[in-house]
Picture 1 (spheres, rainbow, N blue to C red):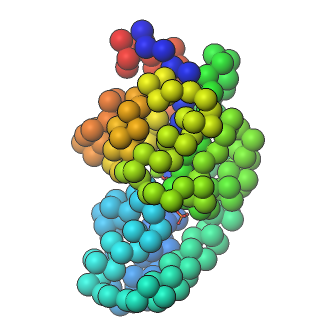
Picture 2 (picture 1 turned 180 degrees about the horizontal axis):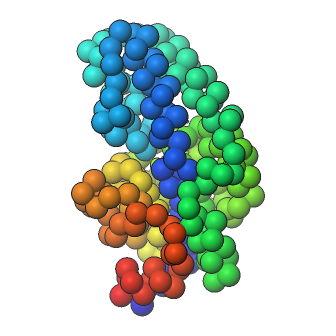
Length: 219
Ligand code: B16
Ligand code: MG
């Protein structure tokens, strides 16, 4: 059986479903700019940085703006997004997450939160999880967006654990690729048809603990 010393969690889409709030805010911006933005389009934005998300959105609308204008647009979207996340409560933690993290603690496995979001601390405070992880690396601490492995490598370094002893939990295609680039094990949270490069895919953390994970997934 493989040895695991650390579990590294993405935030949006793994601990909470904030993709719906990103979607509502991006859709509002698209509508204001005169085009529509579907939930299907939103899939492309999962896990990627705010400015890359804006570039993808503007590509869909076939619009071009200067760098300064783009900063204003992304700020606008972020203000709307923050309004949504400030209403979040611990009830929005996805099923099974807390029990799974507790099972890691019982097994002396370290934990990290590794998110591309600059709003990660606000979300963690809203859901009462800001003291839940050994370390937190968020979008304010990295410069290179997923699929670059920086956020995961920095997490492992701060935890003092080698990449080969880490499992990354990710919901985004770009995030799974970042874990592969970091040479870490990875578990996709979502559907296998989307997360085709993941080592293993779970639909939720419900009923999962580290022993079943190691036994069933990493024989
Ligand atoms: P913000 P994750 C990512 O978070 C989201 O999946 C992605 O949709 C978002 O654009 C990115 O954070 C930046 O978020 O605008 O709040 O800084 O999945 O890496 O936890
Ligand atoms: Mg995510």
